[in-house]
Length: 519
Image (cartoon, rainbow, N blue to C red):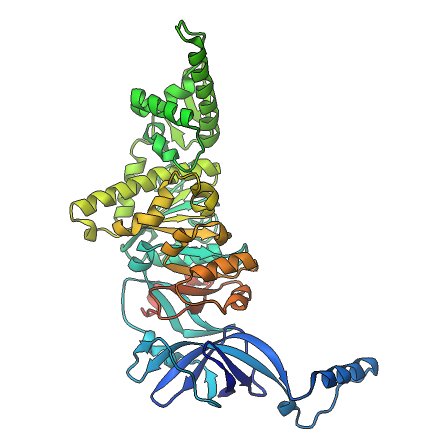
């Protein structure tokens, strides 16, 4: 059914008059049928149009309001007042289903219709190495037969950014993505679960996936489910460089840490935390006293960062949350990295850890993953490994301007800049895109954009998108719960999608898994 007609405008800002009885929305996908191709267009703005002078409209409005009239009568009202839509061309589809960037415009007065599933057949192809993220969406209307599957290997090796304000469905999206990762061994994922919400100990979660026994590993420090390992990391596995770009140390403090590490190796944290200053028999007591002050500050920072407590009577260092242990957990890091190298999803329950402790745990594991993959590349074995991705919430904690301006890179920023050379990627979840440096955003080649009401954040997203989203400010602001736009170098144009409710995904029987189609 025709819903409107081209009446003017310019390339990238075509004016469409809405047909009476139609109801157009921002984000609607439209089709213009040309001689030897079709054009896919999208509405990015709506406004009123009228054949009456503005002063006449104001006068009639005043009559209706002041005289308490129920309505006003117009001669041929559908011709007098109407809605105009501003649209942009997304793609040109030739008769052989090839997609090219649009360089022309629809015919003047050409009639447009809503997009249909058959218009998108050029995007469909069979492949088993994809992840399902949702269905094509036209405004608020969902095309349930048009499924959106993305190449897992490509998007995760080249980083994924998920920006949105609170309450727009970030966690639901991540659960859905991880759910479909569990169907294959093509991508290994380390998930730092700060809210303990992905596994689903007490509710529906990834544990309910039919393949969870084989491809899902869950670590928690307290009361692990039967068959799951306890989340314990040996204190001796921590090196000074694991704190780089996460904890702010002065130069003397950093030097002192490395002195202890050089002298005591794996025992350096225990020795440092148990160190007690006493007046030394020294030729330079002032220098010794200064060193003791540095150690004292270091002890305080490490105690806070790692949630440590020291028992001087028994000469031991303990962890308040039971994650770090001096005597246990010496194989945990190696086991986690082995799982990821096998293409499994590893969920770490970090809900009881401080922010710093969570990031340090991630730093230890991510450093080991990157080292393994670098070695594999040097040995010519990288192609044998799955992609590894690090899923981290509140990403500006490690890749924000304030963190990186110190000039000291942490492992997360290193992966964001260099990881794709080694098949190691970052899946960054954030509310504040604007505080992430442009050089990092430019490396995030896939962005799954959810709703965002903050103008500054929308602008940062638009400026770093893989497609031209310069006219999509209102579109992004109007995205409702579960609605998103995918901007990626691996899709032909920015795809509007509707993400399914994770509970509905779980309820779907395995034999009803959607047919593999990629957009």
